[in-house]
Amino acid sequence: MSITWTETQKQRLSELDAGEDNIKGRFFDSLQERDRAFQVLERELAARNREALQVLRNTTRRPLLSLVESRLVERLTKEGFVQVVTPILLSRGMLGKMTITPDHPLFRQVFWVDGDKCLRPMLAPNLYHLLRDLLRLWGKPVRIFEVGPCFRKESEGMRHLNEFTMLNLVELDDLEGRQEERLRQLAAIAMEAAGIRDYRLERNNCHVYGDTVDIVAGDLELGSGSWGPHKLDEQWGITDPWVGIGIGLERLVVALRGHGNIRRAGRSLSYLDGARLNI
Amino acid sequence: MSITWTETQKQRLSELDAGEDNIKGRFFDSLQERDRAFQVLERELAARNREALQVLRNTTRRPLLSLVESRLVERLTKEGFVQVVTPILLSRGMLGKMTITPDHPLFRQVFWVDGDKCLRPMLAPNLYHLLRDLLRLWGKPVRIFEVGPCFRKESEGMRHLNEFTMLNLVELDDLEGRQEERLRQLAAIAMEAAGIRDYRLERNNCHVYGDTVDIVAGDLELGSGSWGPHKLDEQWGITDPWVGIGIGLERLVVALRGHGNIRRAGRSLSYLDGARLNI
Image 1 (cartoon, rainbow over the protein chains, first blue to last red):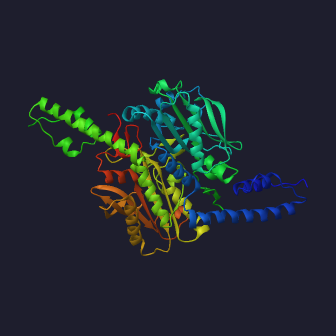
Image 2: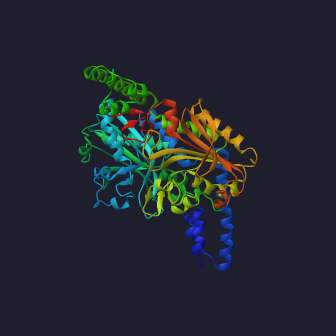
Image 3: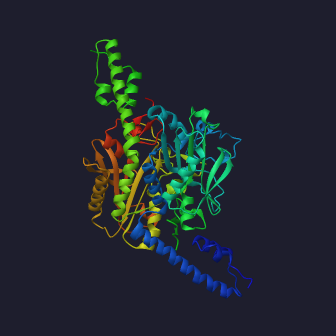
């Protein structure tokens, strides 16, 4: 009972989302027994992937990633938030205003384009930039959000993607003393819209924002919220209290579907809506 | 009657979407008269921009660019098309398979990232890539579309953006002999969904696809369709007939709103939903 999958078999089972138990918990008495078990399991998993693609084709017609985005947009606009659409290419200066300079851990994860521009690693700098104009034009409260692609050079582990989809919402208002309370309300609204019930909020500390409240499901961080007044605000001419939350949409999909690998949920030519295509 | 706006005044009027008649068709007897007229016009236009932002804040809550995208997605899925979400970062090889090599006019418009990757200048290579897998898994018809960011180094004229939003749909089916007819049907469906009535279809010829049918409103090209069998198909292992249409979403917004400059419709920190922010 000490024989287990070959590396190639493991790889294939992982591609087909066989699940931890199937990948790490199966042992066999002989190579023949193992290879027969692999054949059976692979056929079953391929059928399941094919079935998921049939459901996509005949019924849902949209990947869960896109559906979750639509649900969040619909709910947030109902809550008074205005959608904004900002540039994906950022100037180096915009990163600098977030204190993401060469000595910052995030700096080496930035994709540079033509030397002076980069692919945004987060939505926050653009939202910060808009806040001041919109406060002048609208007065308080200013409630905005964006949802769209962000980019970081990652090791491409099970939980990170080079290209991912962020939702970022910000509310600027007379929130002094109740920022964390409002943050918790907004996190609950977003999770309800995404269809995620089983989550918790954890106090934490991050490089860019300092104190944060993270949204966690199982051991997966789905998003993170922070609030101001904040040391970064001065750079952007903001003096009013605010709360903001950033959520990774691929992670919401992983939490909803129980995928073993986030690549399944993201922009891909190998997977479509969580199903492997080379089956 | 020979005095006209200063360059600074013209620039500001253009920023505020004053319209061709106001920018080029106004002449004055004296500098005082001109500057008074400018003040009046600027105030009026700023008020109009501010009003548009109030409508966005209180009523629509989504930029027209995002609304048009949602309408197209909704309609196309109803017509049996499946939405796909593919990588924004392409390998150089994917461009090569589109014959976009260094001697191709489009090549010098490509944004390169880390030398070997680029920002997709179009959605077609990724859709081509998926077609073969999906044909094997689904059989005919294969109907897919993507809507998302594309990037080209443009002179940033009135009609081009470095970052823009493309919709690309492809249908692969037994269409031999009726490709152009089907293309015209699909163009009509897309225009109806986008709310554009006043358009025409023009036969044309382009670098990448050869013969095309362009969707034109006034003198603005909104999109372009082509069909196969096509000389590019072999690279992607495609032998069946297909039709495809690519549409620029910012151009749909320009056509719907009558904006004088496409920057107003696109990803921006200076404009929000067509309104100038420094007012």
